Length: 458
Image 1 (spheres, rainbow, N blue to C red):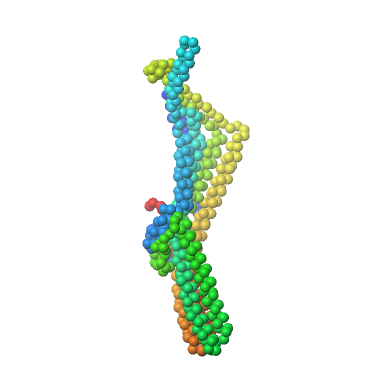
Image 2 (image 1 turned 90 degrees about the vertical axis):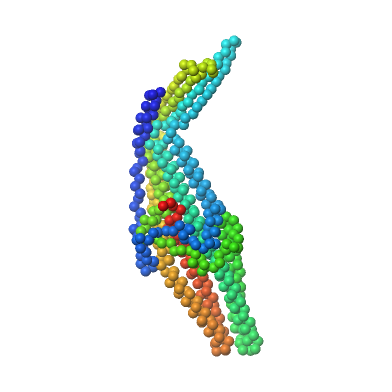
């Protein structure tokens, strides 16, 4: 038995051999800093990038919506279940690095004529335990660990995406509610204009053409109302799906303006190194590390595989003397096998190397995609305030133009066509202003998501 223990100790010392390539994080194939020109907002090197969602969202209704989504969303539940499954698989693979010790007890009874032959035995041992001289089992365990960590990062990415999608859907509902309100106000104004035009036409002060032109504005507003009613209903359906349950009216958004004040700007900083901690990038890196470990397992499979079966126990013909007699026994059965021809060991190694190259390309692509997404969001952030201000001035100018055109029409100084054109221009400017406000809010949410600095302990 002492020799067996010595063998196991020596094997454990030899198992330090690792045939996996030394992992070195690849250099990120992106510039060291984010773009900085006229399209981008100014930033400082000391600015800490990213925000937790609880700092991003201050609007109490939206915050309650996100909390509900994090608690009930089914996609997130599926992602968390995948994490638990990956953790369990890692535990199974890690268990192979230690012997599985089992205990057995047996009894047999036989009788021939007057001769009774009874036997009892009890032993403890392990069977076919692989002595990991070349690190095959160790690298398989490492690959399983990295796969588990990749799944965990995938769940973190799912949480961040869920928060961003919920906030965006919430803002979209607010914008469509405002578009519906605008179309209803426009319809009311157009109906008043139509009534006036019909009255003037009845008095012979204007032609039938003016009546038909006024009718087009009325019908366009009615069409927009129908479309916006549908869109608001669909927005609520989308919000219900994200929240995992129907959303009551008390949690619906009040206005885009309140959301503009209730959603903060996410700083990006100067250095693009923050992208290396983005969950999808970390997920890709863990997959690359797993592929790297699989190369070590494939290389080790080309060398001898040594297994050991050992047991100690007692045996006796009488149960009462099973543990007191001289029936102690032990056994050890080492075995070794090595592929000589066939078996696909070389093919498995080539496959593992190709998989490593695949995950390397995916890791680099994840970094490049992250850099593009952040750069695009920063470009939008750098100009959206100016666009929003210009759009507000456009609405104000359109309101003045329409008011003046309508006064001139009522006074008989100008044609109805000018009034109609001004009314349509105002309607379009107001719609564009709502769209611009939504773009501002959506870009703040997008920048939070693409920076990805949330759900990580400091």
